[in-house]
Image (cartoon, rainbow, N blue to C red; front, side, top):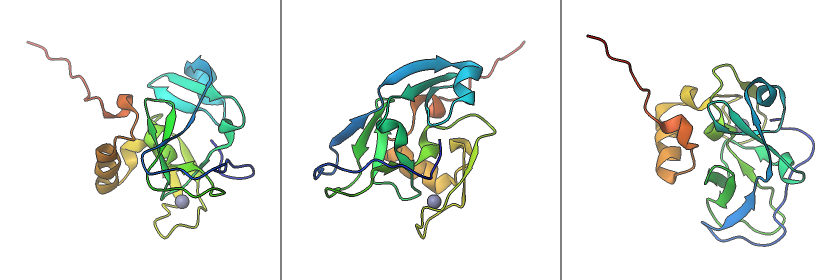
Length: 147
Ligand SMILES: [Zn+2]
């Protein structure tokens, strides 16, 4: 993902909760997925490489949309026509090394965007309650037990 250059803008007004767009694209696994930019991570080792223009949706630390059903963005509040569509990339990132500099301009800007696991606990909880975190990031870690 990158946060410069092109963006995606609302072509009409959206109501809070409304489906805004879907990240259609090829599913890419493993290393190949990690090396691509502008992907949406949908599993521990799975990515979707979105088809433009939705490939160019930017990150924001106070997003107006959130990810639901793995590849859909839904409005978190009313979005007027012309506003840029943005979501928090951390809600789909779980690579243990991923970082991106952010200059979104929000007072809440985290400066450096990292994996979901590294978000402040309060923000993890907020996003979890909104239902906009990829399921694979929320699954409890399975621990092996021995005798
Ligand atoms: Zn930011």
